[in-house]
Length: 518
Image 1 (cartoon, rainbow, N blue to C red):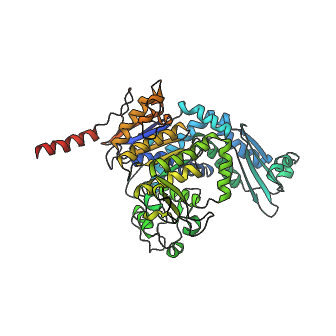
Image 2: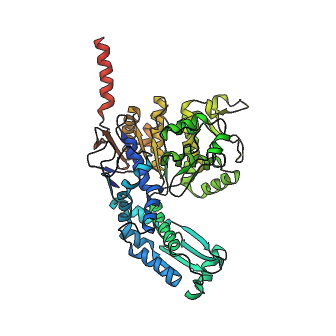
Image 3: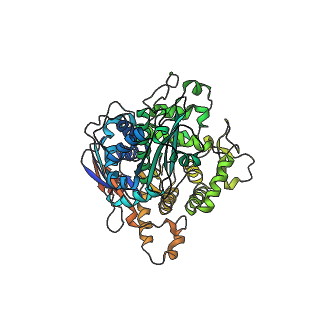
């Protein structure tokens, strides 16, 4: 996917980024790497899509999608309609994503929670030519059913898309049966019977628009997960949706109930870090941390969801893994991350969700300890990587986009080399990964992984690598590396798979030069 960006924060010059399965942004602090990564998360994730869908439903945008508008009209007049979603994606898919990207100047200020930076001149556009087949395949595999009931007559609106089919069906009925029998029942009703009690037009329009735009978004990337730099502080608290009263609504905005915060103990440090990120709002204020930036808010929601996972949920995940090799691989990669990088096990303090449930760490060298270590007192490396372990074990699905801000944060150089091997393994297992970094260990070792992939006898060099797995070797065609500096974004991966980034070497030479002068 080609992404063209201009006038985004400090990045002023127009530049085109080739978004690959593994994409890396490198460069100095305050060069715009994180803003660029997060802006892509907003466009490709739910934040920008939901805002655009709302604007389209309210008819405040100029774009018109004729098949969608016709389906809305048919449901209102006839009580049922269909949309060929594959044909819709072929004709309008790229246009839709560009409409979302084009609307970014309207919401980036709130997305980044800043009133100082202006985005009127920001321009972001996408070329999906290389991803078209991926999008259409995702459309075929996509499945969803949504229903709602209105009024005393319980008039229902159901919208359905089955896996392996191209058609979205929308229909109304005056009585609701179970989901499986509803479609058959509706087919026997005349249009007059189906719309005995009309559904509000704005409801029909809003729900159909949301269904179709969500299908497009999730067919390109099934979900977008962001691991912000704040993760090491947030993981230390008992973050549960029920405790914090934190929910992320469909617009991607996090709400924290102030009264709940006051009753919650042991979480001040993490919340203060969050408050600092949110323009320094005091926790004592009535609306403390009301509006989190979207990456932080979704990360909190993801942690809360994982801490709500029950033993039944875990059993369901295990059953899915038995029939899905990629899910099993993600769970195995979580174990590799535990054993070979963290040297311990990540788990929960209680088998079932509980207000006191915590994330715990059991070091391998101290397996005889009766009580595992609480996350607040473990090493910064464990805090850094525990969320990734939990994500891989309980949530990861093929086709998701994972965005990590500085995965090397708090990691020893050896662990940094291991983490780039693991991230390459994630990509080879069907996830998309985008991360920012300052680490020369990561960029230098990436070249090794690319070179190893090109060898015919990969097994010969396997044991020379840190995780000793050929699955960490990655094709150069799957990788893009960009240097972000001086308001520019430039390709730094040459034809031989070498990352040509001089900043790290320049600093090393300067330090050595100072020594010799002394």
